[in-house]
Structures are given as structure tokens and as C-alpha cells.
Image (cartoon, rainbow, N blue to C red; front, top):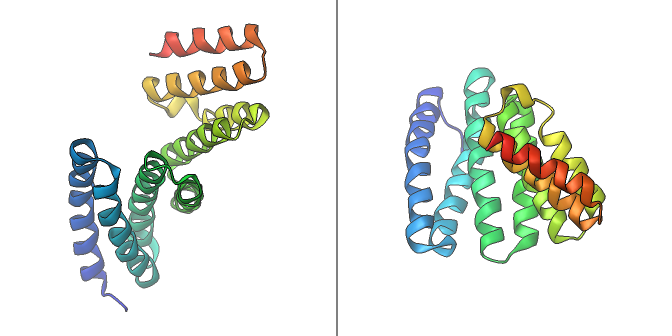
Length: 174
């Protein structure tokens, strides 16, 4: 299906509004109820991405990255780690294409959390470090979460001094 620019913009505005409702649904009812809606909205975003060009595409990619991040979280919260990994990768891909540095950082953070579940301390630390490459542009609470994630990696690696250092940086940014 192909959309006009006006149709795509109207849909993007609608999906932007719906994202907040989906977050509320997850908070109130849990991931299972929100996941179905997120999946259908991601299908619409895919149609939009195939229909638009230039600036409208960048907007669609940023919104798609936000929805993909939500899908990654909802899959993880539902116990579907493979689904979570798929959507985290999709989030990163769309965020990179949109030049959405905040979402790129967040998707790297999410991948670091997934590496924790895989018991891979080297990847946990590497991805947490990569997530804060643009530290000057990151909100402090986000930066604190990334330092805390790095501390998780050091704890997995049994590097307690490095763990304590990262936790101190997390506290300083909280």
C-alpha cells in the first residue's frame, strides 16, 4: 500500500499520540495487552516508511525507533528474549538512519542489558561504554543508568574496583 505525504503525516501524528496510550496500557495492564497494539502500529510504520521520502522518512524512522524500543521492552517483559533482541536491533537500525543519537544511545544501552542476560561481561561493558559516547547530549538519569549497566558488566567480570567506580559515576549522575 502506498500513502500520500499528507496521509503519512496524519498517520504519524496519530501514532505519536497512541504511543503514550500504549505506555499507559503497559503500566496498567501489563505487556501482553500493549504488545498487540505495538505490533500493529509497527506494521503501519513499515507502510509509512515504504511510502515517504526525506524529512517525512526521518520523522517516521524516529517514531519507528521509539515503537521498536517499546516492542523490545514489551517482548523482554513477556519473557521473549529473541523477540526483544530483534526489536532492539530494529530500533538501532532506524535510529541510526534517522540520526537520532539519543535513541541510538538508548538502543545500545538496551543491547547491553540483553548481554547481561547472556552473561557476557565484555559485551555488557563495551555496549554500555558505546551507549555513552555522546554523554554531553544525554540526560543525566539516562547516563546514570548506563554507568549502572557498566557496573553490572564489571560485577559479572568480577572486577570489583571498576564496578565500584562505575557505581560512583552512576550515583553522581542520578
